[in-house]
Amino acid sequence: MLSNDKTYFNWSGGKDSALALYHTLQSGIHIPDLLLTSVNTSVDRISMHGVRTALLEMQSESIGIPLRKLELPEGLNMTDYNRIMSAAVTDLQAQGYGHTVFGDIFLEDLRVYREQQLAPLGIKAHFPLWKRDTTELLHEFLDLGFKTVVACIKSELLDKSFAGRVIDKDFIKDLPKGVDPCGENGEFHTFVFDGPIFKQPIHYTTGEVVFREYQRPKDDKDNCFSSDSAPQMGFWFCDLLPVALPS
Image 1: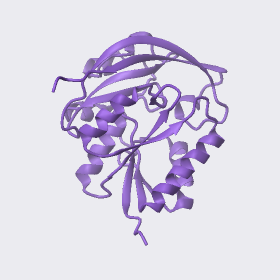
Image 2: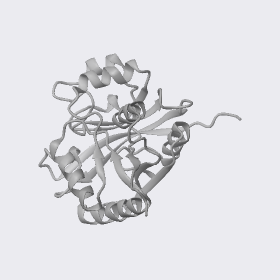
Image 3: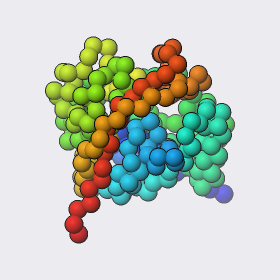
Image 4: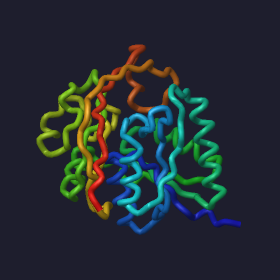
């Protein structure tokens, strides 16, 4: 019988994931040997972030931890999401995984939701960034040498100009009042392309910035949607294109 002491990491490709993975690796405890990422199969991109899976795969290769993609169809409701996620996690549990790591910072309801979903499977969730000050976290992220670009923004909270920006100290100063510096309320999502967890940088170029509008799910657990009542939600996506360097 497997001992269930293996750990997988819930990898989004963004800055909070990267910093949480950094601290997990530094701690020497529950070191993950697998990255798990939700992917929208209809567009072949990371769910919510809109980043191409080719870039996700480049991250995995540079980090040196294998990737497992959780394939999700377009327009998924929470019932079907829970079913697909439960099946995937049950499979991981059968392979000896008893621990998992998240990059969540302060959303209590999201943490409770995650823990409740995992508890019946005997998997313990870990949150290395939990309750840290988000301004301090972002400064720490930059000071460690991480580099990240904004891939997606919520249009009602940030204007189009933020999409495709590389985050630096000026970015923090330019954020409107009420927008969390780490985008923990779903204001923006990022793609990390360099830093201390990578063997080499991820090379990309910016493509078109496009606007997408979606029907707001009534039962969605994603923190982007929890505080709004409008039936539609809009996002600006900056298409990031992988650049293959000559061998």
